[in-house]
Length: 83
Image (cartoon, rainbow, N blue to C red):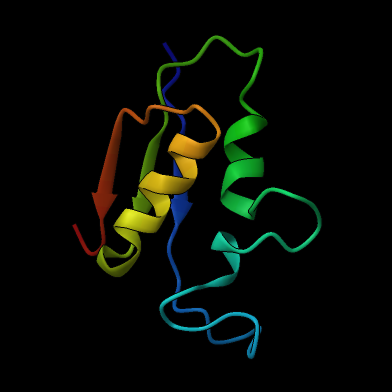
């Protein structure tokens, strides 16, 4: 079974002022109603995969979990950087 690993890290320094250290661009809805993280997870729809593993910064763990919950995704794990 394929296990998707989604890298959702970064410091949010290159898209300022929208993106900030505690709210980087992958957690923002830049081109539609969903964030870049949510769009990435939704691209897995229809594929036979295990629950995705999301790698993120420790400071973003609750935002990531909430965004996944909002689209009905139960991750296999949320791995915190730098682990």
